Image 1 (tube, rainbow, N blue to C red):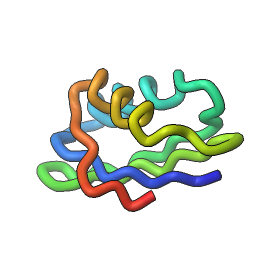
Image 2 (image 1 turned 135 degrees about the vertical axis):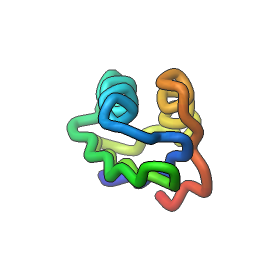
Image 3 (image 1 turned 180 degrees about the vertical axis):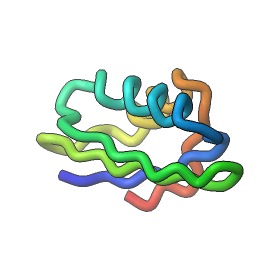
Length: 73
């Protein structure tokens, strides 16, 4: 299953690494690919073995210090 999140506040490679680390720690997540748009809305493409609760994904992004906006999963 593929889920796409729009993430606000990311500005650099460290941001990408932090978000990727938090999302890959979620059970069932197999791959995370983040497309950084520094100063704008970045996109995270999350592949998982099954559906993952949107709140769980948002909490992981928040743990990394960023905000999910306008989810287009």
